Image 1: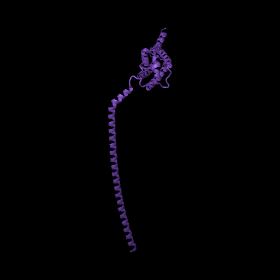
Image 2: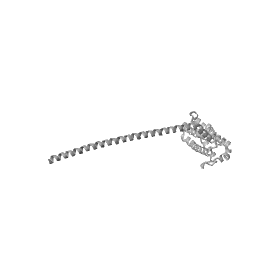
Image 3: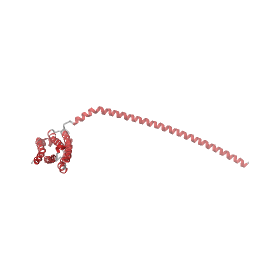
Image 4: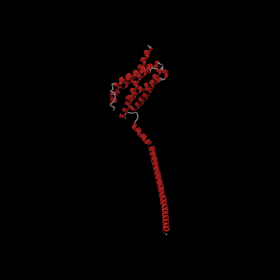
Length: 250
């Protein structure tokens, strides 16, 4: 009897909480939600209550399995309770407050906490073959819902808690002096680099010209010396030839 009551209580908490919150926000679906710009892959409205009912029931069973294994002491149920609170908070943020940026932050945190809770519950219960089939589809649905929330925010950028255009404008205005100073410093650095490069190029050119002039001078001197030696050799050869003729014909 006690086990059956515990199972019913664990299932009733998420299912009942989700049902109650759904009742509070159901009027927003045909009015506000219907007017939102939506991506083509948005599921039909009738899919959501069915899907959430199944996931709530499944997580309730997973919670029951975990509590029976002492999950309250291991911290698994703390994570489970936190993800359930984030889950319950998302619907009013999205459907009632119409703040798609805040709901996106909530469901992103929910996805992370729910994943951590699933891992902890599987470890604590020592029944991962039960926990993962119960919680895994829920995590997949949360990932899909997070992507859908993000896309709805992109297509309906005015439905937000913060005026992000104003925030962006304020950031631009406040950072303008710093950006201008950075640009000025970058321009000065570029000018200094260019000037240094020009000076280095001029110095290299001057050095190259001097080296070329020295090489040319040395080559001319070598050529003159070679020519002088050749003339001396030629003159000496002429003298030797003349002396030889005189010796032979005299």
